[in-house]
Length: 294
Length: 158
Image 1: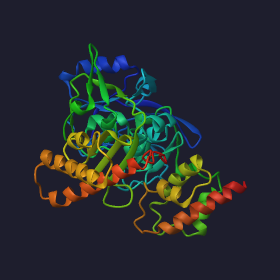
Image 2: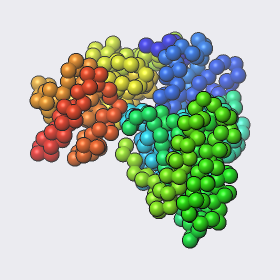
Image 3: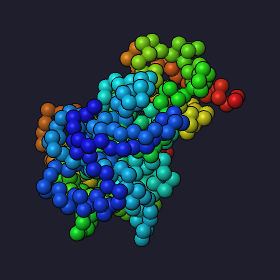
Image 4: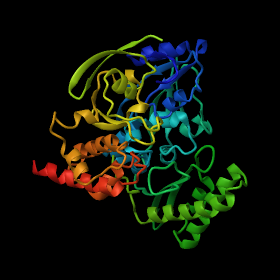
């Protein structure tokens, strides 16, 4: 048994939004896959009079569609569904790959991409690949709807900019046509672990590098795009020296954000090495091994 | 706290229950339905001892609120075999002595069942990945993997 709480299960999206519109009068927590929230409930960290709003039955939030060349993902899709979806493997292979790395098969069957975003863990696996696709999130409330870049929705570690009364309604990804991919994820053992560092790379090459996108997760309170390294690589030859320099720029960008910390002597060279590996993997024309296993 | 009415199928039997929202699926299985084969280990979704199937997927029943199981099809270790007849996975676990203390066994069996539903002919790598969500503190993993491999082969013959 968990500590007591009030339970509300909306049948429609509108019913959920109507309930949340009165959120200011009582603390409400949104339950989707539950793999994070139930831990919080169990530890007794929620206020006693909390309402748990169980959106897990809202089929309106479980969808996948393309619109104007973009991919739109419903927040209730589970990591397991995303990592095995043919459409996602084709459109966003690193997102499929990243979701196949989340937790265990059991956690992937329940945990949702929407929860991963709103929970805003620095180590959230789905976020770096979404940043490569310049993902936007659409938040909906009873009276309004707004769309913001994912990068600006993530405010700090475990802090997303979900306003009172809002639900995450849509995640929109731009295509990365003609790109190849690289993916590196460092965990303390071979499998089933929270990422210590994540590097996602998308490269478009035509003789030289036309465009590079590099997203880094788990290194800073919020995942980021290594813009200096990206800018450096644009129009450059993919020579070992250029890749080394770009990787060192990415590592320096991490330190600019986090400052010199006790872990910096370790993380600086390791991130640099991972970034180089991810760049080399992308240069080899890889799809990032996006075949999820579950 | 108000009780919530739920309807669910457990091991092919339909139930209509009134549950407290702060009961987890794990609590309902063990305390309301007395299906104590499903074990509580860590209670935080890490050890996998409480693994059951919901609509064919292996999940941690400690991370599912009982009301979230409404309308779902649940299979526990008690539903694996048929009456006195053990499931090929259970037979293989016995043959390979794939347990020491046995506490993880129901979770291992259900994770393996989920695997064989999706991949009837798994590689060793598949087996390791699909069992990665269940921890055996006696560390007898090799026998468990061997047992799943053999069960898959046995089931192909049927």
